[in-house]
Image (tube, rainbow, N blue to C red):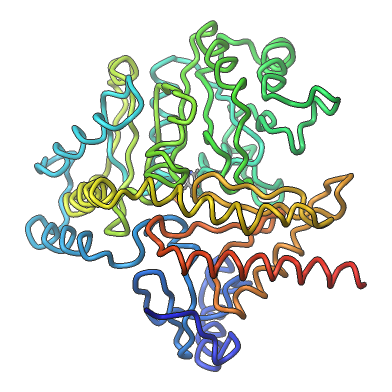
Length: 450
Ligand SMILES: Cc1ncc(COP(=O)(O)O)c(C=O)c1O
């Protein structure tokens, strides 16, 4: 098996030339400030190969969209045969059998109550669809979302998101109707600092005692839009007591609960869907990314019968929403998960991540290590008392790791994160965790010696 090997420090000459051309012809998002300093030649399995002949271990997996590594043979066969048979089709006009099969399969594995499916192409579109459905089903304009969440780059996606205020310049005023509250998590909880600490119910109290008392009446709110585990915001897992308190609040106010499982769905956190960790039964759920096992883009919104009926007037879908070949990729993905015990493997790798990364919490620059399945983040701080964010330290760790052949995520917020393939071999994964731990210690030492 390949191993990560960086012979030519990135960017090598070919990468450098291509990156220069990209920055001359593309918007900044694509062309400049590339956090990854090389250009991809090809990818295969758990590796990325750059145009300068370097080999990297891929801990980004297309931001979670190749959960079985790149070009898994079962997925490749399913989507190629699917494309030969169906090519591209507009399935909200001409239905095809794989979409019917997939709806049944999703309903069988989803949290109970989700009984209908609408297809989309991307996570962002699934988010847009879900919000339309919530507003139409309730006849209410407002929705509650949480600080740190990310829901995509469209206007609605960005207005629901609240990663960093300077990530959304001049967008918020154009899409009103979102009420943001702190994400329920003890690490930077603005409400409870005392010995009792935060158990997440403080956020529910805040919504009830402050937000809906002073700002917007409950009867104007369609519901709550939430990532069950905050991903881009640093892998924050809500404390257990938050969930029953939230369910009670939703029940009392006739609010819908929509879970955005675009990143957590399909095994990322060790269960098929993150909602399962607490037995949460949402009214709507957004899916995308890992859904077709790296086959072709596909996304979905699942909803209860009640939501589907109340929002019947809303049009969903679109030309590319629900491609039959992509649906076959999803069906093959679910088969591989079952056959190869992927969820058990995630738990095995989770314990290796714990073993290598948890001890880093002893460093002054590491605020918290977060591991839930293979949803993994290190939150860097300027100092352990203030817990002020230190994005430059996450960047420094990322750069060191890339030089050692490990490609992860630095997010510009304060986290170094990884989204490894769920079927990564144990020894490769261990090597990656060791490299990240070494890089974190080196960055911490460099900082203390300044
Ligand atoms: C939780 C969540 N929702 C929505 C999206 C947007 O999905 P996409 O990039 O497929 O449009 C993302 C992407 O990272 C995400 O993490």
